[in-house]
Image (cartoon, rainbow, N blue to C red; front, top):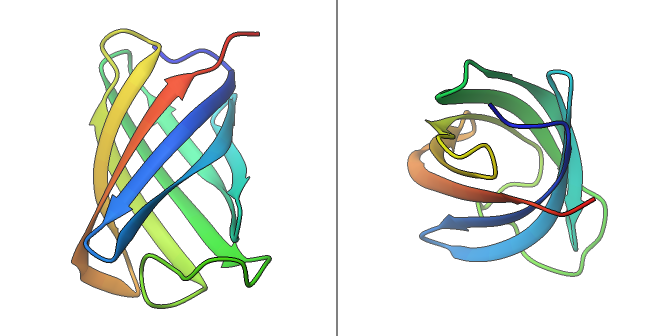
Length: 108
């Protein structure tokens, strides 16, 4: 099971990749990277993580990895160690574009 806290994120689509910081706390997700902010919810049953979040542009510093700025994303993945989770999913606005995210827990 993933602990509440901050996680570094590495995300990828065929259009590019980037990094950011995500906070997971009691079923809620929030975070940002150099261009986008994100907010939503997640569930973790100890092995499987599912998440849904919305993302929007806060800066013109980098292009969107989806080709659009305001998106709704659905992800699922495994979290066997509780420190690292690898997820895959899609954005509702670009359903044919695969999206992968790896989260790594940051030390307190």
